[in-house]
Length: 415
Image (cartoon, helix red, strand yellow):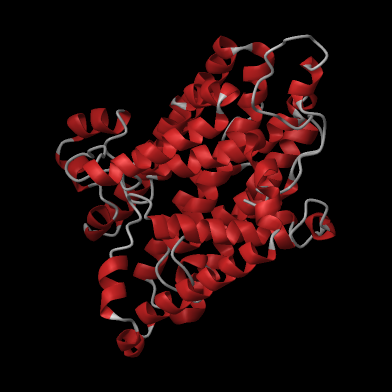
């Protein structure tokens, strides 16, 4: 999230071809491979922690997540960084190896994420079913959205494999799988016309709202995250990674931009304050309420997108790439979780239900709520540390997976 306006170090790959007469240089540019970008890992890890906390019943730590102070939440951070890192890894493959090789690598990663989703689905169903049966509480199956699976397991399994059936809290990976499937086309278009590609993404977003485009879910309803709308954030992240960051640097460095962002964030904060303090509801003019509500998350409401952009612009301004705090041991847990986002995301889904179960069965008040949240975060950190240790100390092939690819764990692994 914090890379939007930074000048990217290293020589653009297009410069290497500049000496050739009349050579058609690609429109996108990429930084030279080198030290991994810790800010991406930091904010990806933060998004994972916030998603986990938001999936738990309301508790003290819930009030620390960004969704309580504005229109956007951790999902926007996660999808933007996913688009950025995917373009960073596979954009280089597109330039160096060509469309066919890059597409093959993307599809390989899509398959890996799909397998992880199926595995997560299977274990998550087993977890919920075991708890519901052992404690004779069918409400768990209803709350987690697996009643249809218990009624028609054969049909539901097929729908789950088609990404149309998903229990509660399992909507992010299917969205990401669909977005990654279209990544080769996105990169191919951006290779020559990045601004036009972003424009087409904006057009699709507008058409989604105009004609109510969506993907249906099983047994009813629509996808919780509409890919036709959320692709805008993903493509915008890719656009920033492939040279858009440089072109926006002057605009985002302007004091005018900074104050506009601050004003918007303050306004969004006061709007969300009226949600938590009903007595302030009369402060909001009716005409603004009619224009603004509902703020749709499924279709990525423009107010949510603008709120994310304001947060990102201020982050860029006040958190430089060389900020010494990125090396602080206090931020190491967040960075480690961000470096292994696929595994930690799946673990977070399991832990969120386990926490939900404990809080439903044990009456412990606010202290227990906070304790479960902290324990879940510590478990995620511990798992990230173990995975990191294994990859760097126990895996003999770890040296082959180091480098730029490490920035894109969920997006690209070591592709």
